[in-house]
Amino acid sequence: VPTNIDIKKEIVRLKEEKDAIIMAHFYQTNEIQDIADFVGDSLALAQKAAKTDAKIIVLAGVHFMGETAKILSPYKTVLVPDLNAGCSLADSCPPEAFKAFVDKHPDHTVLTYVNTTAKIKALSDIVVTSTNAKNIVDSLPKDEKIIFGPDRNLGNYLNSISGREMVLWDGACHVHEKFSVEKIVELKAEHPDAVVLAHPECKKPLLLLADFIGSTAALLKHSISSDANKFIVATESGIIHQMQKESPEKVFIPAPPNDSTCACNDCEYMKLNSLEKLYNALKYEWPSIDVDEEIRKDAVKPINRMLEISK
Ligand code: 13P
Ligand code: SF4
Image (cartoon, rainbow, N blue to C red; front, side, top):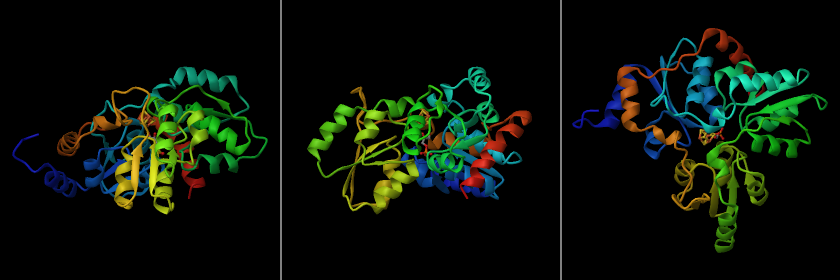
């Protein structure tokens, strides 16, 4: 990136010149969220990708989010700032092993969290996100046998709130498993008026002490509507930017991780993206996401089922 340019102005200029839309997940850096045309959770990003008129989608998030956009809009160019922005949760579910798991449960409906590769989606019956998972599980007949993957924490949480006994894949997100229950208990003692907000990718002991559990969009909404003035936020710290923007007078404390190397929990994949990489992606229309057409045809069906149920 040349040093003599105003990078934010150039991004806006390139975006208009090329008829591109910049979409960002809540875990992106503050400056990426602020330059984006649209900021949202995984569901909102998929919904927006399915209906945008823009020629180019720049998905500032992680690889599976770009892939989902490409699956839904195959004739558009989908760019990501950094192809290495992966996801430990998606990585915890390799396609061959998951196929064997599916084959072992032939009479089960295959429900998968959106944090997976296109190959896993192609093996699925319905995709869910944290925002719609409970509604989608509840929409299935009570006696329907279900396998759920890859997140064991979200799966256990869904089982507990829906009274189901879904068979779970044993995967997890390293960011959400890192939060320290002990340190949150200490913080609660220090700030007795603070409300604990937690993402369902967190482990059960943490969810047990949370006051409110939900997707990033649900946590944001709760932080706005709640009468409380202080919140301990147990999810990736990027969401705090929107919380603080919506409620400048409220206090948001990032939940601390177990290790003491960092005060908050950043997802190193999400944070691989930068304004410079976003600028380069727009300028050179690279790197772009491609999905094999055979896989895409199978992967789009469970995503469309999700979008249909979530209307
Ligand atoms: P949501 O934004 O859908 O809650 O997902 C969180 C997440 O882990 C995305 O990687
Ligand atoms: Fe994946 Fe976890 Fe990062 Fe979300 S926070 S992208 S689930 S590694």
